[in-house]
Amino acid sequence: MNSIRKIAKVWKSKPTIEGAGVHLKRGFGYYQVPLFDPFLLLDDFHSDYPPDYLKGFPWHPHRGIETITYVLHGRVEHGDSMGNRGVIESGDVQWMTAGSGIIHQEMPKGRDDGLMWGFQLWANLPASHKMMDPRYRGLTANEIPEANLAGGVRVRVICGTVDGVRGPVRDVVVDPEYLDVTVPAETTFTHPIRRGYTAFAYVVEGEGYFDPERNAFAHEVVGENYFDMKRDCACSAENLVLYGDGEAVAVTAQASPVRFLLASGRPIGEPVAWYGPIVMNTQEELRVAFEEYEKGTFIRHG
Image (cartoon, rainbow, N blue to C red; front, side):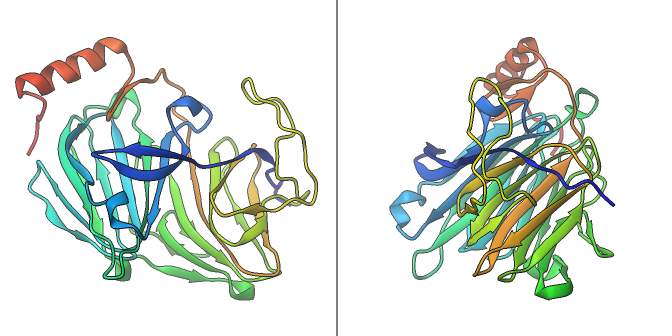
């Protein structure tokens, strides 16, 4: 029997402002490195008030990472230095590998009623792939398969495999899995994850127990913070759950369904030098990247 992962830490996403003035909530980011290795950041942009998001994320560079944008509701207009242009609609995904360098923009437009809701996840690249050729994968909602499991559990498989259903994003260096999971009331979803891989869940809607012991806070000291263990305490919307090691996760919905993002990946275990939209291994590599950006030599391909 697979060993079920226990919760290592839980916290609530925090309001912040990014881009040209986009109000969003950050699940984790700079200050949590390297807890989430190979992942760097998760942002939740959710608002029905257009001034919160319309200024968007104008043209800016990336190097050394992958950015994954997943839209639940609304529209995001995008463009990049490789010539890609378009609109990310509800249910669509943009998986962009910045590699050696890309300049792009993402401008949220929302639905006709003003609702805009989506997520951006950053995944790191190892030193051996920091300067790889950039690539862009735009996936429409109907290209993302859904696995329908026992008990009515539904899983949109963006990357990875669930019950034989394989997601369209493949051949990524850190071997990630990225799932959108909906678990009906009083139902348990169990999913295998490779031992040694980092895994986390972000609660989108509803409430659920994210490990069999029904504990919502850490079992041990994590960094400088200590969280008392609270038994029989569910995790709810905007909670970020970081898992300890094991071979599977088990999530049980309460009296209503719970929806969450589940991601896992192989840790890189390398130094992280991070400033703004660029993530390298050393401060010298960061200096070179920004110097090239100022000189107009940042883009190697496109």
